[in-house]
Length: 308
Image 1 (cartoon, rainbow, N blue to C red):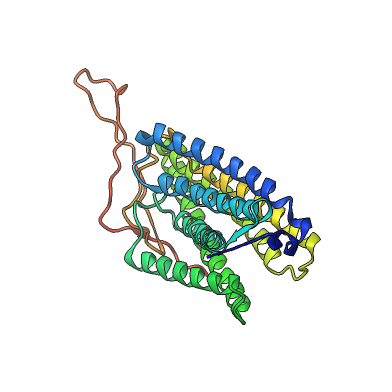
Image 2 (cartoon, rainbow, N blue to C red; image 1 turned 90 degrees about the horizontal axis):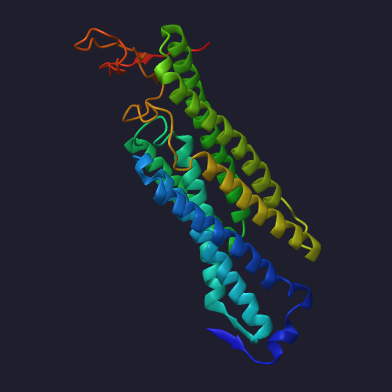
């Protein structure tokens, strides 16, 4: 469905005319970033035993599509006197989909997917699917200006950030515990791998603090003036770009420390991975130069002591 005619341009506020070049600029920035990200992921695909990097690399393409539709919509409105409702609907859907996929990615990373465990448990996958669906539907209702959905979206934000920060904190505690075991047992072969994971989560934790502050600040902004609209638009677009690029850079496909892929199949709450021992082998000539690291998976993990 389209509205066209000479009166369309007269009915639009001329102060919104800079929107097409602004959206075009952001579109070019995201296209370049998405192409570079995808190329790096493909080139270093032999370093990744999982699909986490491919999932992260697909999100910028959704944002690129949203910005492309935004540019085409506003450009056609101002310069072709045609405002397509279908194109506006596409911008609406792509924006909601981008935010949902971004938070699903953050949820997976916070659970340690492909970092501290190879896959999520059934209950974790169900929780992620439930939170993702509720967030998507709530965001749709909020964007459609349905009454009371602003309150529901705020509650959804609080729940999502609580779950993310709680799991990041748990993973940091587990990694600190593993580092202390490695230092006590003097197993230097695994120290770099575990320390790399710890640094990744610390950086991710800092990035999520910025995400929480920026999202809530934009959400609670009640000033709907034109000046406020420009500020919110620029802050939102730059914040989304820098934050997602920073998180993508942390978890990019790269050659990691030896032993990085050594992790349990599932993450267990309240348990830690057993200590790792280095067992030198005895080659035929009797030297220890070619000793290897042997990781022993005990049938039962050590339970963490209860905290008072």
